[in-house]
Amino acid sequence: MYNILLIAHSFVRWLVVAAALAATLKAVAGWLGKGTWTRLDDRLGLIFTIVMDVQVLIGILLYIISPLIHSALTSPSSALADPSLRFFGLFHELLMLVAVALAHMGRALSRKKQEDVSKFRTAAIFYILSILVVLVAIPWPFDFARPWLRL
Image 1 (cartoon, one colour):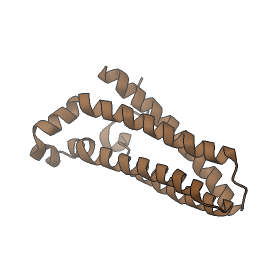
Image 2 (cartoon, helix red, strand yellow):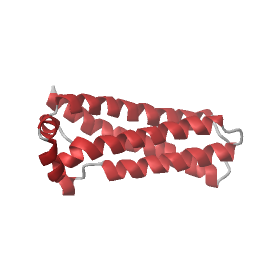
Image 3 (cartoon, rainbow, N blue to C red):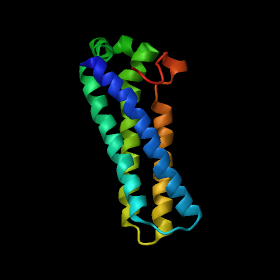
């Protein structure tokens, strides 16, 4: 079960990246080009948040059954001393929850705006912030010897 979830988490991250890029690029283009907010703009934000939510749910399941997290929770003081355990036991989860919150805030707040440019600006700013937090929270292969895609 653990390996299946790990593979799913690895695969869905690329869906998150694709959805984030699509929603963000469309929002930035609409903001800078003073475009008209369309159903597509709203749907791209919806897809971005849904894919992020799916990724979080998989991540929560992984957190519950992960031997790495179990090890970190068994000995919190030594987990804080180990960079890998500290990252996966604390920082990764917290930062990803912040990223999801920013994506949801961007979508919700942009939908409440009246002017199209304001909608695009709000979505773009929050989506960019969300992506930046995700980039900080990713366990990069050069930091933790994790593959780009698990199979």
